[in-house]
Length: 216
Image 1 (tube, rainbow, N blue to C red):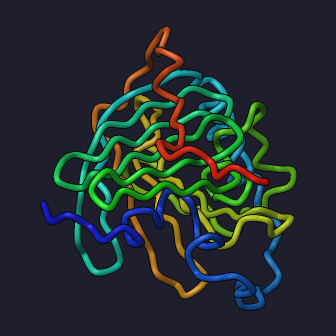
Image 2: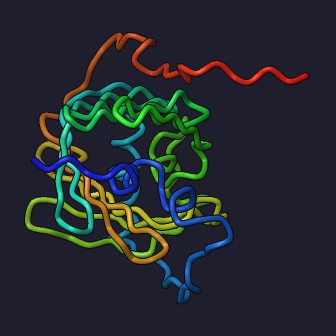
């Protein structure tokens, strides 16, 4: 697999707000039609599943808008905690501690931090999963073996939108796609996602290796 540039590799994990530059916003959106009873039932089903997904782990494969891919290990511990450890030679490690998404690149020797609330992923890392409050669900689509839900932050604190894809029988989160303010999409596919127990809390800690400058 081809190693992704740092900017592209982060797109699906920290969202468009931090990557597209200050002051840029989404284009005006058309009004969203109310969900049908059938669509609402699927949204409720997805919310219930995500609410039950307290701890999980697996592998992920990320594909950017240019078709380049990278992969790594994925760990989740709700509320708010997630870890994406990219395979070499990426050198990228992305960790949410429940408050901030911290991004370290050992190859470039960089460290960045973003508020979790600015990311579309905060939609399913919340303590209480509510896809009917504070979230705009713009589309529900059915597939032969599952369904997808496209949503964005109703308060517009998170730029871009996220499409979650679920499999049926058994119910599971299969992938998501984040689309930024320019319409560029990054897809993350999950492999072998399984419930986990007692994930080490150190997995969700990532500190800046460089000491903060001393203020005089």
